[in-house]
Amino acid sequence: MEYIRKENEIVVRLDKGEELISSLLTLAQKENILTASITGLGASNKFMVGILDLNTKEFKGKTYEGVYEITNIVGNLTTKEDKPYLHLHTTFASLDTVVGGHLASAYISATAEIFIHVIDLKVDRKFDSNTGLNLFKFNH
Image (cartoon, rainbow, N blue to C red):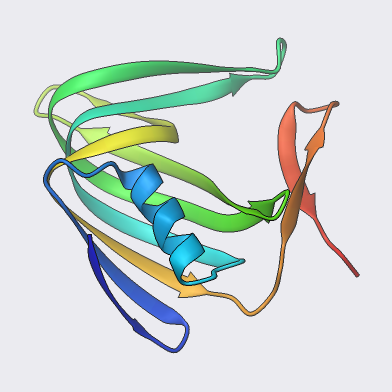
């Protein structure tokens, strides 16, 4: 991973073999990012996406392998229990199919280009048993 930062803007390049989620969490710790918006695209040969089953409140994921373009990454970075917390949604496309959902992991097959806009706030998260989600918690 290589990146450049100017004030609140960070541009990241991930290379072949790197895992997207762990790389961004490492960057967040290194740069002390508490809250940010994230967008990106790239290519992956192995990834997991899923959904939250609202009835069981369980994450249901599926792993895919093959030649895929990451056509969209969108989401945010906040904190949970004083650690970086990523919430990313994504879409992957092959020549035959398009899949998407909550991004659990993605190994880069060529490159990924990520833009991070750091926001000068601290937004934390707290588990909500009604939804099964880690919802924004605002400290006023």
